[in-house]
Length: 137
Ligand SMILES: [Zn+2]
Ligand SMILES: [Zn+2]
Image (spheres, rainbow, N blue to C red):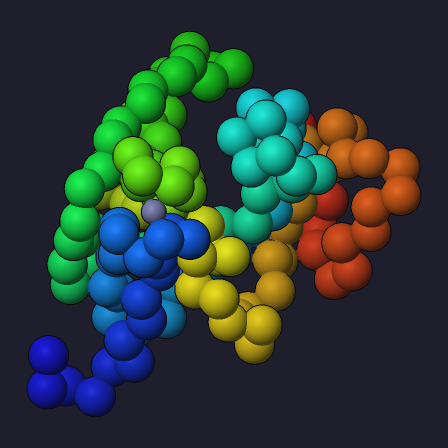
């Protein structure tokens, strides 16, 4: 890019699907809804929102799976067909934005989630320190 913006690469577990992003995320959030628990196989998802303009490239084989949200709008999961890693989501509510799975950056220093959606579905043992909890989305 030549403008000094930090580049970040989010990749699935096998490395087949890679998204390169320029600049910092617009925000980082956790979602403890049951759909995110199923999609991640974990207690919650952590995602970073990036504007479409921050996307430098999306490389590799990918598959899309679209589901409905509680608000009746679509959410689209984009994942690697080889290893199944869910790398990012798009939503009808903000179609130009990418919500990238923070774990795919494999960066323990990545910014912490500022907000935890669907905190009402969070397992009792789970504490997300520093995140503002919202009972629903
Ligand atoms: Zn993969
Ligand atoms: Zn969720």
